[in-house]
Image (tube, rainbow, N blue to C red; front, side, top):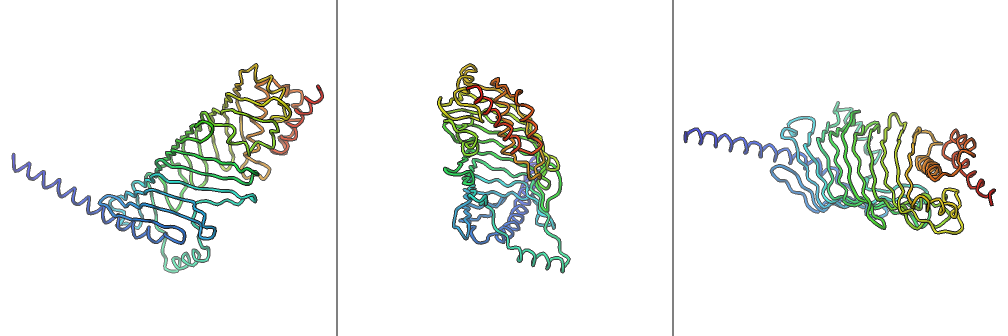
Length: 370
């Protein structure tokens, strides 16, 4: 009996030792490739090779030109598959990003800045041509799982005017599976959870799949307790009255196929308080809206539908969403939209701007009553 125990122990030691050796070699292989992508603006304070993973700590990225900081990551852990260093392809079991912070901005002209490293086109073309001459193919990479823990996103949007829109997401948890490079068309399962800063903290969650190559997707999205005033820069052109408070709960199913979006949903606006006086909200006089809201207990529940071709230059997702919400809110409050409905919905043929022009007839309708 003792001999069998000794034999079993030796087998276990050999298996564990072999696993650690292969993992160590695979990690060393990945480390060499990681070093190649470190270019201008990207710094890594420390890289360690552990028996089962590669860890990189203190990662920072700043734009070489503007010196703006766009990315901070406390730690990244890469767990390779055992035999990835023996094949032409590279397989990674998991990439874990711990406490990353992403910084994005949009200028008044609409130029986006963010944590992406610039790629020199000429250099990339030169490398590609050399590979073709040698008959080389690009390395196949497969990541079984990519996840983010305790992430944050900061977005400053100056295109909407001053003061700029400030979107701040915190405690982000992101998980996507089955990522392949070069990209191939397939469904990658995805989950997201997080919180949004405001007068009080709201929550976000999403679950479904995305085709990274084609951007097709099927996702459920849920938001609870989101502060309406966060989005004031996006709707202030349609709101001349003072909106004091309000919170959004929303559920929607988003489907994108061949750049066609279809997103039916349900929205609830609670604690919606408007300062009584001059001005309008979605072209409805504030005084009228205050009176209607009191009858509803400062709470509105409504359905909406956003649908269109994302490649159509006349289709603006933000404008379409705001218009649909405005129409739905007016209907929920009992505003006689049907009186101007013909004018309003004829505008849909001209895209979001056409709907907006039709919607202004609501304001004119109320003015006639004075």
